[in-house]
Image 1 (cartoon, one colour):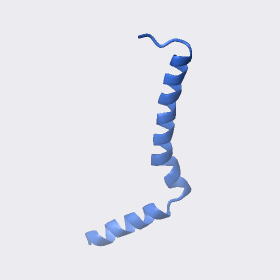
Image 2: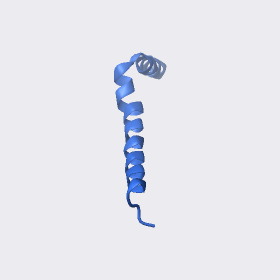
Image 3: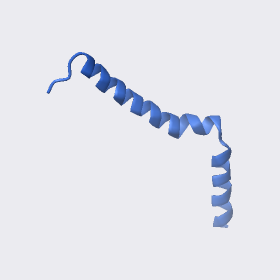
Image 4: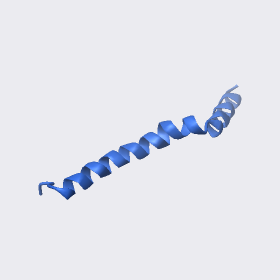
Length: 49
């Protein structure tokens, strides 16, 4: 089945949307709110000593 017209647009839009969600969860959200990640880092370094 070839993707033509609106089906192609939905496919490409869905793919780009998934990439956007992944980028938000892994890069953008930690820059906006770094506190939970700082606590995790402190806990990891303190338990390793």
